[in-house]
Amino acid sequence: MKMKKLFIALATLVAGLSLAACSSGEKAQTPLEKIKEKGTLVVATSPDYAPFEFQTLVDGANKVVGSDIMLAQKIADELGVKLEVSTMNFDNVLNSVKNGKADLAIAGLSVSPERSKIFDFSEPYYQVGNVLLVQKADAAKYAKVEDLDKADLAVQKGTTQETYAKESLSNANIISLTQMGEAVNELKNGQVKAILLDSAVAEGYIGQNPDLAIAKLSFEEEEENAKAIAMPKDSGDLKTEIDKIIAEIVESGEYNQYLEEAAKYTVVE
Ligand code: ARG
Image 1 (cartoon, helix red, strand yellow):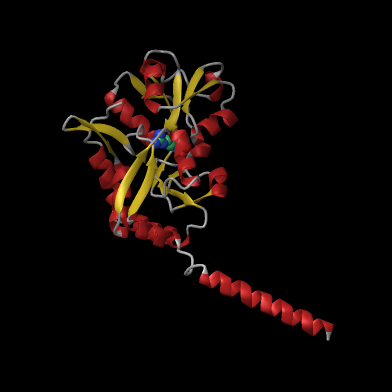
Image 2 (tube, helix red, strand yellow):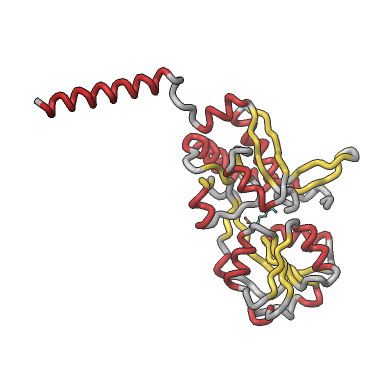
């Protein structure tokens, strides 16, 4: 008898609770529904990483362009919302997704196990490798890790390259800089000896700076450096939708077209 009473009491409680849950509002919105209702897709990026995202001059005014920005625009168009590009230093990009200020981060972002614990990542849209950017005269000088002993090696703050350098190139004197442009200036004027960065970005700098080159030293283990979009954990239908768009633009070669298009702009630091 006691058990039965307890059961009824519990059942009443459960019924009451679920009623309260229902009356306090409709079913919770999914991440995708929320963006559609807002009517704006906020994308966090750090525009110092050509050809992915960078600044250029359009009619005398600074404008953020690049293959990632075209990707962001494509996603906004497909979702039927406006795109708002929110720019900041790279070491703030992921935070702004974490604290809900941005819906997505598209910033030449590499997928890493540590980041995957905190964020959902889309399917990858581009592969690059890590390279060492040096002055042309030094290209042969840096051929193995030991050659970096005590050398001033710049990395961008908050990047996977910073983590990698601290773990695997700790014989060098690692210098973390906030802006990639700053690192390149320091390399050109001899304040640092090398920069560890993504190959596509290094090639862009070499194109504009014939005094720079990629060092002989290569990084096998980092060869599969996949670029993907970061979004909050459990992004569910938003991730599904974004993965669908990425599959399309990778397969059709559209992302490569974005890269070609981006290469036509002049980089403004
Ligand atoms: N591979 C790097 C990372 O994911 C570098 C990205 C830097 N991006 C930028 N927009 N500066 O950490």
